[in-house]
Length: 328
Image (cartoon, rainbow, N blue to C red; front, side, top):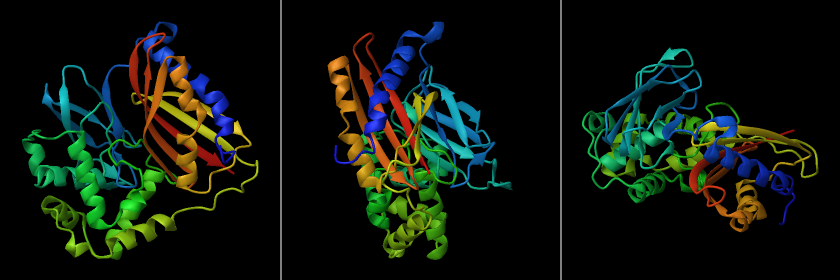
């Protein structure tokens, strides 16, 4: 590899991920494999605490739960059929009542965040106000390809494609706290709206019609806001440490800290190093593979969404969320 950033993790990540997958598939200490579920974070930058989560799927009864103080939520997927629509309403944001419902769409199990960005995706997909559509959702032609196309249309129309990078607002796992890459994008969205004298309601209207002509210059404001929250990375020497948090199918699996690991200089270095790391290609010679679905890096925090597929000792496929936090 061209940088030392990922050599330290590569020596222990194989063992960490393989053991986690083995325990998930075979049961660690008699524990069953984690139940299929939908889970994520509801946030607008700050978390939506104690918000009411409602889930309606193409098949099955409605599901309901409440977000935690960090905006996290989870429901069991038993008896349901994808795709599913998700809504968060009520609750509070930084101590003030949340008066705006936000929506998201799930076309696969695992992480399903609910944020203003995912609300835009639903508006683009439905061609209608998300709250209206959620009252009687129609899932015809809603699939992974349609969701990707909707996100691409929004990003292109608003001029935020490069700033979003490889972040998928729906499936990229994050925490609604300072320093998190996705959280910074949500904060940037709020700042850009204020700087351009626009509202979320106006954004939704544009997404419904696919017409973003009124948002000229929004991309520049969004990019500036996103960069404004960044911090200077540690020097490229051996100082600093790296904390890696691994979640499997939405459930926390393990946390490991490695000393003497410098932060990458940018997202390209982080994601490039990760994609080329022999750790991931090494799965093929051990009866499995790790596919990287998305990768982002900002504020010394890297977020990776991946799928682990194994054939030995058991055959299974599990969604992984891996968070890399580089500390000075």
